[in-house]
Length: 195
Image (cartoon, rainbow, N blue to C red):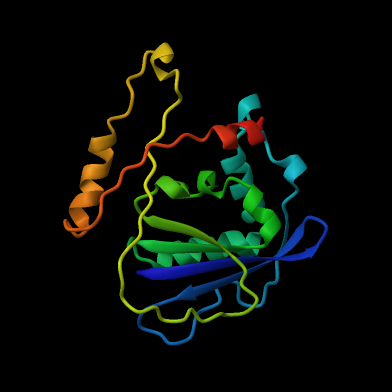
């Protein structure tokens, strides 16, 4: 499987520099499908079409991403390099770009990327420094599971969720000797604070 990393690095206003790297399992160093190109793409939230008004944000994102011919050529090259195998597309995005619906992204030859059987899509935030996580000694697992429904769910013609049906598969994975104390709780304080 090949890994295609696309980074969008903020430059100014709504302009982002696009960096692309292709990782192959048989090579140590990543390939740069863009060669020497340093394309700048513009992603202004005000320009993103609203799907509630008939807009297609996924198509718009694809057009913006591939607006530079060098990026479009690099995308075609990466797809060709995958040889029809699965391609992992990793988007590393500036914080502001996470407001866009990247799961709706539409690109040539694959359609909606998140639904494609040829592409595994994931998106990440930039991490300025790597932090190690201290090892934790093995111990008991503490798990909180919530099964919730509106108090007036029957008014909508819906049945109350079967709490046992949700919890049994989880309990089957845990130690049967573990304490099982299923408290009943409401979120009224939360509902009041959200009103």
